[in-house]
Amino acid sequence: MFENAVKALYQSFLGNTWASYCLTIGILLLGFALKKVLSETISRLIFGLIKKKSEEVPWSEFIRLLRPPFEFLIILFIVELAFQGLTVPEYWGWAPVGEFGVRLLLNKIFYTALVGGITWLGVRFIKFIGLVFKEKAAKTESKLDDQLVPFFRDLGILFFVITMGFIALSRVFAVDVLTLVTSLGIGGLAIALAAKETLENLFASFALMLDRPFTVGDSINVGGTEGTIEKVGFRSTRLRTFDGSMVTVPNRLLTSQSLDNLSERRLRRARFFLRLAYNTPGEQVTDVVKAIQTYIDNHPETNKEQGVVRFDSFAESSLDILVIFFVETPFPREFTRVKEEVNLMILKIIETNGVKFAFPSRDLYLRQDPSSSDS
Image (cartoon, rainbow, N blue to C red):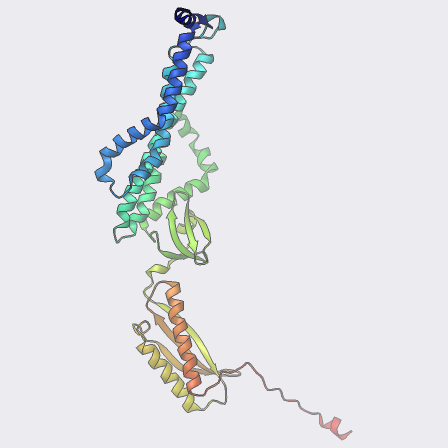
C-alpha cells in the first residue's frame, strides 16, 4: 500500500507530479506559519545593530513599524520558492518570460510587489529613525530641532519613494529613466503651471525652514487666526487654535503676509477705561487712581514695565480713568489670569473707596412753547 501511495505521488497532473504539488503546499503552509517568527527574528537582528543609537525608542515601537513589511517580503519569498518547482504545461501556450504574455505579466507583478515591499520597509525604517531623533530633540532646550526632525523625515521619505519609483521603472519595466527625465523637463512648464500652488507651498516650506519665523510650539497670529504650531509640512502648517480646533494653513500664506509670533512677546499690554459716576468727588477719584497705581506697581507680574493709571477725560456720562499695565508673559492664558487678578483688585478698591461705576445716561430737557401756554 505504501508503494502504491508513492507511485501515486509521482503520477503527473497538468504537467507536474502530485509530489510537486504537495511540496508547494507544504512550503506555503510552513512559510505562512513561520512568517511572524521569521519577521520578528530579522527585526531583532537589525534592532541589535542599531540598539546603541536608538535607546530612547523601545523595541515594541521598532517591531510595530518593521514587522509588517518584513512579513510581506517573506510571503513574496515563500510564494516564489514554492512555485519554483512547478511548471506550466506546454499545451497552455504561454509565451516565454521575454515575450508579452501571462508569464511576463506575472513576472512584472512579482517584481513590482518586491520593489513595493522594499519601499514600504524603507519608509518604515526612516520613520523609526525619525522617532529616534525626535526623542533626542525632545531632550534639548531648543525647539528648532523639534521642527526640523519631522521636516527632514518627510523629505527623506519623499526622496526615497521617488528613487524606488525610478528603480522600478528602470529594472522592472525597462524604461529609460534618463529619457523620461528629459521628456519631463520638456513638459516641465506645463506641469509647473498646473501645480502652481503646490510648488509655491513647497518652496514656502523651505523658506520657513531657512528664515525660521517660528518653531514648533510657538503661538502665532496669521491672517487673524491665532494658535500654536504643531507641525510644519511640505504643503501646509498645522495650527492648534486656542479653542482647541485644528487649522491647516498653506505655507505660501505664511510667507506672503504679516505673521505675528506671539511667543516672542516679552510683555502683553492691557488697556481699558474705568467709568465712574459724575457725582464722584475729586478726592475719591484721586484715591482710586493712587490705589490702582500702587497695586500695579507692586504686583510681581506687572511691575516689570511701568503702568499708567490717570484720570483721562470727562465723557458724556462718566469720569474716565485710563488704566494701562503690562504682564510679563507671552502666553494668552497667563495674561488673562493676571488680568483677572488686577480686575478683581480694582473692584475691591472701588468698593473700599465708596465709589460707584457710571451707567450710560443722558439728561433730556423739554422746552415749552410760550405761545402754547398763553392759549
